[in-house]
Each structure stands twice: as structure tokens, then as C-alpha cells.
Image (cartoon, rainbow, N blue to C red; front, side):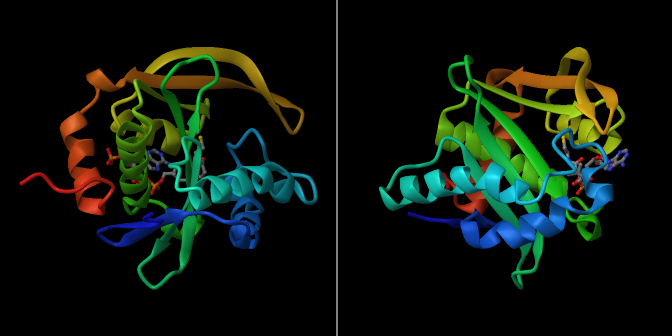
Length: 201
Ligand SMILES: CC(C)(COP(=O)(O)OP(=O)(O)OC[C@H]1O[C@@H](n2cnc3c(N)ncnc32)[C@H](O)[C@@H]1OP(=O)(O)O)[C@@H](O)C(=O)NCCC(=O)NCCS
């Protein structure tokens, strides 16, 4: 089974336990974590949070199954780590996929997030048969909100003071859309370009 895909200047691949040090480097940057409700992580937090997910993913891949909850590494074409993205099955929303992403600071502002977000949507649609795609961020996370909107997701609601981060309550912004309301042609092109699906003749 294919485990990596290339889109212009980046490569995406399924993450494994060997990537945990890179996750640590990413999530220990206070600027990266500034708007992440789950940071700062406790000691071994990355291992505790991501370890079981990565183990399950590796097991599914070894069985030839396509993970419906998938954690990806994004790296440049020389293999330099740029960040991570995930597609996660949404409890209680059949064929609902949630997307999330965190990039190293050096990768911000150059379109890496847009390309990664499009890849995640393409994966949700083509590999998870997504009916809906959603993504949340804290109010104030202008970069994430801009990216979620750019992908075509709409602000569906807010959860006032939902998250507690470092003794401060934060409002969560909930973005989402039915796949039929998204630019599915664009995501199809991304899926073909990266090799998630074979090209149409
Ligand atoms: C959010 C994040 C993934 C965006 O990635 P990126 O590669 O910088 O995004 P892009 O360069 O593709 O930009 C996407 C859009 O967002 C806009 N944008 C990016 N950062 C922005 C910011 N700080 N403020 C306002 N808009 C911003 C861009 O202008 C672009 O819109 P445009 O094409 O209409 O001009 C990245 O900043 C990041 O990893 N942040 C830290 C972790 C995080 O907050 N993750 C999201 C958790 S919910």
C-alpha cells in the first residue's frame, strides 16, 4: 500500500512512532502551541497522546487497511520535517472527518498549510468517503481560521469559553461543511496530482 504522496514541494507520509521526536520538537515551540488547546503537553505527553494512534495506524497499514483516522508527516523533498496533519473520524457523525494541522514555524506563510489542508480534505473524501469535513480552532488563531475558510469550510458555530489553556478560557470556533458544498473538483485534482487516486484519462 502507498504510504507517501508528493504535492509540488512537499511530501506527505503516514507518521510512525519514529516520528515522535519530531512531534516533540514541533509541539514544544511555544509559538506553534500558542493557540493549541492541548499544549503545553506534560512530560511524555506526545508519546501518551500520539503513541496509541500511531500504533493503531501502523497495524492497520500492515493489515492492508486504509486508516480512517490518519496522522501524516509533511516534509520537504529532501526529507526535512515541516509538520504534521491529521484526518480523524468524528464520533457520532457518520462519515464525518475532522482535519487538523501544525507546522514548524519555518514553514509558515508559504502555502505549505494550504497544500497540506487540501491533501487532508482529498484524503478524507477519497479514502474515508467523507460526507462532512470539519475543523476547529481557538478564537484568535487567525492563521488556522483563514486556512479552514480557504479550504471552503464555514463557521458553523462557536463554543464560548470551551477550552481551558494555561488558566485562561478560550472560545472555540467550529468550521465545517458537507462535502457536496465544497470544491470537490479541486480536491479531486489534488488527489490525482498526489497519487491518492489514479488520474482520469
Ligand atoms: C495554521 C497554519 C497551519 C497555517 O499554515 P501556513 O502554511 O502558514 O498557511 P498558508 O501559507 O497556506 O496560508 C493559508 C491562508 O491563511 C492566511 N494566513 C496564514 N497565517 C495567517 C495569520 N497568522 N494571520 C492571518 N492570516 C493568515 C494566509 O494569508 C492564507 O490566505 P490567502 O491565501 O487568502 O492569503 C500554521 O500557521 C501553523 O502551523 N500554526 C501553528 C499551529 C496551529 O495553530 N495549527 C492549527 C491548530 S487549529
